[in-house]
Amino acid sequence: MINLRDLTIKKTREILLKKEISCFHLVKEFFDYIKEKDKNIGAFLSLRMVEALEEANEIDKKIASNEDIGRLGGVPIAIKDNMLVKKEISTAGSKILENYQATYNATVIKKLRKEGAIILGKANLDEFAMGASTENSAYQITKNPLDEKKVPGGSSGGPASAVASFQSVVALGSDTGGSVRQPASFCGLVGLRPTYGAVSRSGLISMASSLDQIGPLSRNVSDSAVLFDIIRGKDENDQSSVDCPFDLKKVLGFNFDLKNYKIGIISECFEEKIDIDLKNSFDEAVSILKSLGVKVENVSIKNIFSSIPCYYILMPSEASANLARFDGLRYSPDNELVGDLSELYSRQRGEKFGKEARRRIALGTFALSSGYYDAYYKKAKKVQQLIRNEFLDSFKRFDLLVLPTSPTTAFDIGEKSSDPLAMYLADIFTAPASIAGLPAISLPIFGKNPLPYGFQIMANPLGEQKIFETAISLEKFLRKH
Image 1 (cartoon, one colour):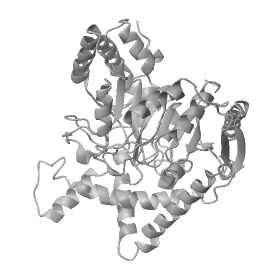
Image 2 (cartoon, rainbow, N blue to C red):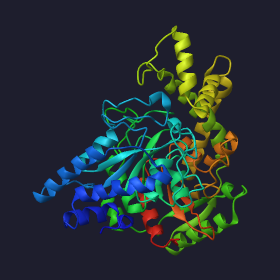
Image 3 (tube, one colour):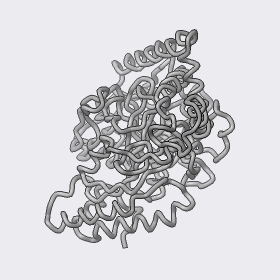
């Protein structure tokens, strides 16, 4: 009997290649487990049982013929439901797309399939990735597997919960203001936001195009590194994409030395009121880095907390423009297409966009409107450049910067749902990397609290190599609960 809790990418491939279990039976075990476990968790919106088992049979045939099965051959993976999987319903967590069937595969899906991954299904999210708790989905609330009274974070709460509850080996989420890193922190996972452009956004349902980025969620750094290596790279279907140098063998082989690294602790993060248990567990992780020979100093990023007001002007503005295409006519048409066009748009968008989506569309439309564009959107773009320049200047002195991922552990379901400002402030430590276009990873750290915190490592653009070398070294010594 295979223990699903033991499975990593490497372990999954090993047991399949050694024929300890067939891929078909492994995938079936996952679906049997999901059938029972997900009744309480609510990680998945839809499953691909028939298709996934057929794909598993193909992996078994390749193994029997001694053919290459790829780096993810037979590995079950969950996909956030804002990435297109051909012929699958892709809702983005919204009623306005409840019947939309994707006509093509996102670039990241093509890359996963080329390496033999088995896509189990589409995972829940806050509607159009707008949220920090996965309570804004039009379909269901996802629970945190570590404590089902708590949120899993958002907006990638579904993929995070799937991995944390062992319903999937790994997952892909998307990170706009922290939507991979914050759920990773809340669920005790590793979550990476790559450099903006390092991973193609083709086939990702856009929320804020200049901020969105796809990233992996996993239970260890090695799996995150493997996934990143597979999905990274320039794509002709995404003009913002770039080549990102990365040496996976060097990372997995520990063929590096951290003794020349200099890391800055962003001091402003500890001027805020944060839990003393978080501070102690953060300091413990820093002490480990010091013991590995890393030089550590404090660094000031004076405008770091301008990231939240800047983000909540830029993101709604771009969302307002991107979501204008969803009128109920082209992507998921209503059966009752009656009335004049104005009445039809008003009814469709008013009824099928959720409260948070409508709030952000209204905010963005206002910020972009005549007479307010200069005062809000244009000024926010200037602040964004100011923040980015301050980070880039700091990377002239430091290889990496570190800060907490979130100021708290996972909060209660319903605790912040009636207070949008409190919910927005959940991104206070993750929004800066998004605004500056930087790569950042969250690792789980523990204190006395039974729930995990997140330790966040940021690098200069295209600095994923340094992030992974540091993260995989630190992971070996971090205290586990």
